[in-house]
Image (cartoon, rainbow, N blue to C red; front, top):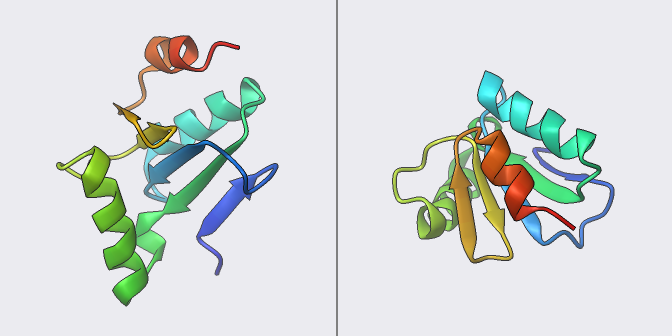
Length: 93
């Protein structure tokens, strides 16, 4: 199963770290889709071994608590949790 997925293209500046069973993660994906935002995501709980370790290591750079969802913008800003207003504001065109 491919757990590193892209919505639209892989050249995204937005990366979403999620858990496959998390309702807030699903709501964040739905919001990004509704906004027609291009993003990459990884369902961390679907990874194994070194893939999972690498994903968690990358996530820890932005969110040391490793909570989900974690939305990373331009490798600089991290929005933790489903914060619709904050996400909409950060992704305004």
